[in-house]
Image (cartoon, rainbow, N blue to C red):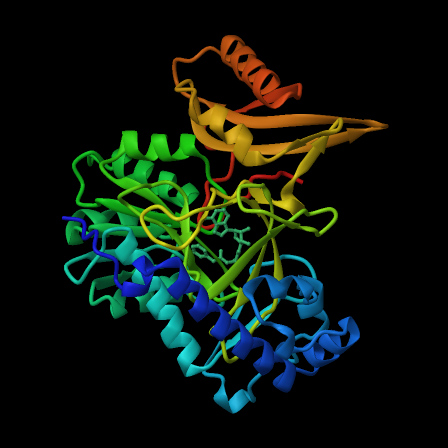
Length: 423
Ligand code: DLL
């Protein structure tokens, strides 16, 4: 039975109480950054701002932003606010180009992270009776260990499977009967398929809730997951620079976007081009300021994720709309901005197609063409299915595309984060 009681009273505190706490923590964090990170000391001085200037939460907008490039230039640990002997753990981003971004955690940071994750798993209905199957990778990637510590802190039973070894995962799910699974949505579909192929029925399995994140996914993906298996799908968001998973989590009772744990992270939305602050309700790029971190705090970090802030529903804290994608993953096809997750909506709503796909932009002289790579399900017709998908994309997203069909198994199956853009 899912447990719908919030873990902490602050989750349902008054807005005043929450904002007072945020202001106090924000002032302390800015002071900590100014006093202990030469990079921020210099940046604040250059911008003519000082931590003492912050009298209200809105004053944060005067402070300079931090970018991934800043972190790369200060690789590996020049942006840490604590000496290495106070750092008990290191994680790194999964970026594929340039220096990775490194994050260092003090013991308090690890405890806070575990707490945010425990709160997230509770928001998804978990408690000490839950059995949590963790298929996020363990290692420098924050998914596995983040989920693991949070589930343990909640008092749940953890099965630390990590990624890969799909057959073994299927058997573990069948034998150990976990109630919650934490995994990327793309790998989940792969696992659910393997479960069916083994002759088991995912409509009858023990899993009641999925906590899915680390990559963009669509409402159509939620429908597919909930209709083909017996679980409710919830969304979890986070990034290694800020902490890892557990920055925001969708509440099971509403499934209406990701409640951001605002007593730990202060969110803002800015216009990605002008960098001007935008009011709640307007879509733009997410900035996050960590307001509890000791080891590697960040001020107004440009996450590059495109989303919208909405008022709280199940909790006092605000919600992030489903992340559309990263500004870096936006494809521009003859002037139209397209995200792979928009194309996913249409592929997943067509029973003629498998749920795997990739998109590619081919540049011929001065024309860019969008190619959508898919696999046909047995018994479906190539021509009618291709026309149907082409029309759906043209009518809803506004771009023409070519459909490329692959043999069954021709598109790589996800083992962790799916690669949606073929380069
Ligand atoms: O992906 C942390 C994580 C692990 C989150 C497990 C959720 C579950 P990074 O490898 O640093 O950290 O990648 C962070 O992944 O900036 C987003 O672009 C993307 N991302 C994470 N969660 C979601 C989500 C982890 N729910 C980057 N929806 C972020 C869409 C997501 N994108």
